Image (cartoon, rainbow, N blue to C red):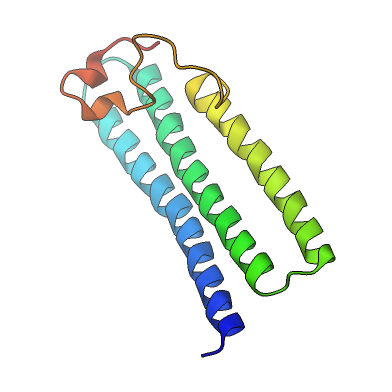
Length: 136
């Protein structure tokens, strides 16, 4: 297999992984939220907040993989000024989306320091007793 065909295959594979990360993440986040809603306990707002965080994380991961696939295909297969310009616009748009999602998920920009006493963006429901903690 020649180099450009191999890089095209790698790019498509990483693209597929990005889409899969978004789809699987959305399904898992939805199933976990539904399972939490079925359990009789207060905290519907906390379920919604955790759902948004999980969904946002899967979208962020998928966007990062999609950007990587675009870079692989553009740099390895068609490194023209036009394709690099298009890549720059795509990366700019996806980076803005990623930053916006990060702000929605964590309440701070990616370059801001994490406030003391937080969980570092971890999902508190995975920690024993974590799901019962009050929302921040």
